[in-house]
Image 1 (tube, rainbow over the protein chains, first blue to last red):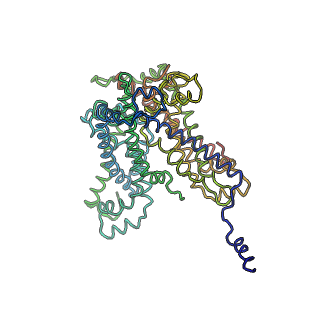
Image 2 (cartoon, rainbow over the protein chains, first blue to last red):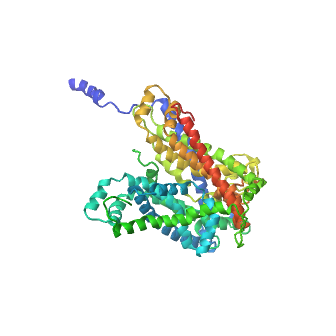
Image 3 (cartoon, one colour):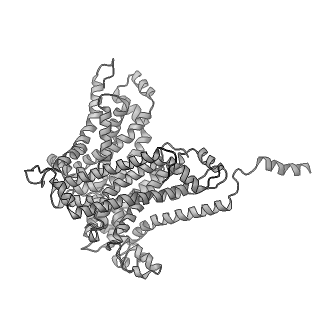
Amino acid sequence: MSTKVSAPQMKSLHFQPRTPAATTSDRLVGAVSHTALTIWTVIVILPLLWTFMSSFKTSNEIFASPFSLPGEWRFDNYTRAWSEAGIGSAFLNSIVVVAAALVIVMVLGAMCAYVLARYTFPGSRAIYYLMLAGLTFPIFLAMVPLFFVLKNMGLLNTLPGLILVYVGFALPFTVFFLFSFFKSLPHEITEAAALDGAGEWRTFFQVMLPMAKPGLASVAIFNFLGLWNQFLIPVSINAAGPRVLSQELAAFAGQMGYAVDYGALFAAVSVTVIPVLIVYVIFQRQLQGSVSQGTSK
Amino acid sequence: MKRRRKPLTWDKISFFAVFLGLPLAIYLLFVIWPFVQAFGYSLTDWSGFSPTQNFIGLQNYTKIFTDDIFMKAMGNNVLLVICLPIITIILSLILASLVTVGGSSKGQIKGLRNSSFYRVVSFFPYTIPAIAIGIMWGQIYDPSGGLLNGLLRGAGLNQFKDFAWLGDKNTAMVATMFVIVWGFVGFYMVLFVAGIKGIPAELFEAARIDGAGRFRTAVSITIPLIRDNIQTAYIYMGILALDAFVYMAALNSGGGPDNSTLVMSQQLFFTAFSKGQFGLASAMGVVLALATLIFSGLVFVVNRLTGGDKDVSL
């Protein structure tokens, strides 16, 4: 008898649900929120799905109905886009240019940020502000003179020229971001390394750089997206050179007035979009984390 | 470099030469030097391929400001600068608020359940190359085979059959703006979500105990506390609106019907690389740069002026 009574008492004392049941208004707000967010998600995803689906259709099918599924899953749009429209070679050019520029800018940017953040010398502030200025000026202003700088160096319309320019324009962001990162690393560690007899070079490459890995990763992802998506620089200074992906895509779309091959155009867009989406989905935690750096939860 | 009582060793000298010298050399040569040169070129009549360039003072600038087409382009940029940041920020703030404080009103302040899915998907457009976004939406807006008119026809709105969204001067700009908003809302949503999560939960709890509802909390607590994020977003979106080259080039490369989507950057590109008038194009670049600086300065000043007291309203 007594046990029967005490059991519910125990429950009410110690096992009270910690989260109270949602009220009606909560449920309403929740439902409205989910609806609004779902609508936006659909607006985002529908165009992408439609593009992907259309990349398997023939031009006739596309014009007959924008919604119908392709009659069969044909990949010849992709073959045509990849080889005839030159998306394949442009894709490879993009990989080479972005990979090279990314490696160089990460190394140089980390070195520069490290020196600026860790050493005080006359002019260090000035250099820092010079870097900031490069972040705020519109790229457009530089394009015309840059064209002739590269021309004089014989680097116009070449991939090495494009790589160097990418490095230059990605540098301010890299330095700016890593500056605060290196600044936050404890000074004791550099001192310990110096006591252990490590020179400046060794301290940087074997002690500081490994410690900066999280910061480096975030910057690298943003730089990758920025450089992969870059359009203005290649069309200005690499117009007659080996095209990169964004350039080739624009050129392909520009021809569409004459040769109507919409299926291949959709395939070309898909080829451009899908790799970055995959990279994003793999690294999305990292990326969202770096946007929200410093916040918990 | 001058650390007292430490001799300059080879290690140190080589370290500074490489670590500071190399990045700076590339930066100065490919970024700063062209910027500086642009100011110089803007005062000449240089056509790029002629060996001579004559100093013509501010003639390029008077030419620009009396050029109807360039002024039209500038007007379009101003329109973009006014509309794009506001629309993008309001939309992403709403979505970010829904994600972060859409949860239960009892107990701990919680976000909406399963909301990370929305965040991940909304961010998709930011990762896609802008030129691909432009081409994709060009197809979506296609009068006959496009997705938009297909949807509208499916909904029974037959008056939109074969309506050219990008070919009509009344809709071309709005349609273009939507594409840019589509591309950036997700990014700023993530930025604002991060900002909101950085606000100590006690503040929200205190507001709730004081009887503030969700809307009141959003307006009186959230927005003032993430105003720095909002300012950053405003400046970035404004700078983007002053450029907007990729989107315009992809959606209406010729400037659109009646030049209704023509922007300064397109005119600059055309003047430089098609017409070869490099002096004039550089002057356009300087105007564009000044516009960017003025815009950023304005946002700073407005934020300062309104940020002085605690009663901040958007």
